[in-house]
Image 1 (tube, rainbow, N blue to C red):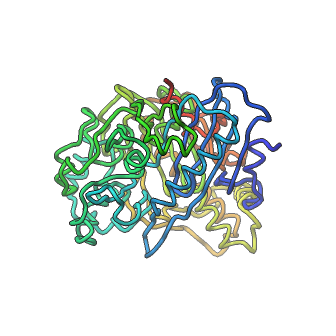
Image 2 (image 1 turned 45 degrees about the horizontal axis):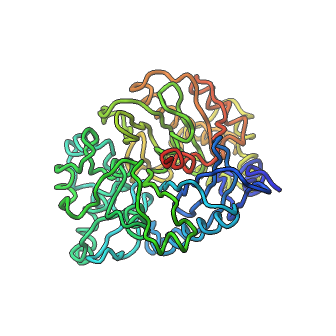
Image 3 (image 1 turned 135 degrees about the vertical axis):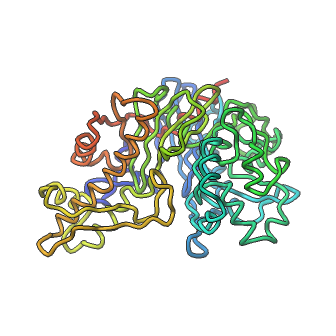
Length: 468
């Protein structure tokens, strides 16, 4: 039987897989007589149902994928029924494979999704994911003062990813669809309606990532709702992540979960901090896959918006602060593909980059896919400057690697301005399969970088808030 790491290994990237997402990965113990809990992590392209024992060890996982739809340029949508059906299939299969019911189930969902609902709570179209870039057209409607004040109030930077901005864009681009809307939802709220009898609910963690929740009060912010053009009666009721839900009996029976407590849970990013054991600001989590993010946990509801950081609620008195970048491993992959005559894979690209003197290389601005932190500018573009005729492919590779790395270091420095110097960085994601890149990040940041041992941290975080 393969270990999870072996099952996730891929030759696609040469030395390592930046995504660490196998198409289907089902790991369990040969026999399982112990108690366990399930964390259901619903992601952008797949749902993972994960079983953890009381010691926090993952003893089972079932993954079910679905497409991220691109019906027009800039679009990044999910078909809601495909997501919910995949989640149900993953849950049911995991329970069958474990041979016993779990003690409880907790939910983890991605931030910044938006789903419009009709009067009967049926979806009006697809889910707009965080990656949908079309709302960039609505950004011009926000003055710089509005951006600053809303960011400080809600903890969410004004950006096309934000549901607040998505709503402004929909009102302009799809007025008929908005006119038919009775409720404004997201994946979590719609799933709770489908599975439970507890009402139209959203957890504090996800609500704080909508750009419409007052971070200090955990209530919908009137100022933000006015900018979004909606009234509070269209939105779900905000509840703590540890809220216990009441299953719809037919759903519980179909999934094999009758009598098993279901908990509202939280957002993937915040739960990943909880699941990784980052409960204060001494440690900072760094994940780099196709994109990247740095985050830690602290106790301030307000953070200076000029630092370009998000600040999301975990629970009363505790917040997750950090910055996500659009430009992680996929920037290296883009350049490796462009220079594939010289580099067979991303591992070779990195090795070549580190073989040359950085002082002799051009400079690279890594914003190939627009940018969130530290710029929060979806229209940002990449740049390669100082390129001369004597530069070889390895010099370009070094510029690209350092550009991506230094962008992360800028986010780190902004983060440390709020929480103080980190004692160490906990690394996760595909970049950890390259010791050379890990060492470069340690060198450029001046911080110790260690590989995190948390497996499926968001799912595990969901189980931690789902303990009866």
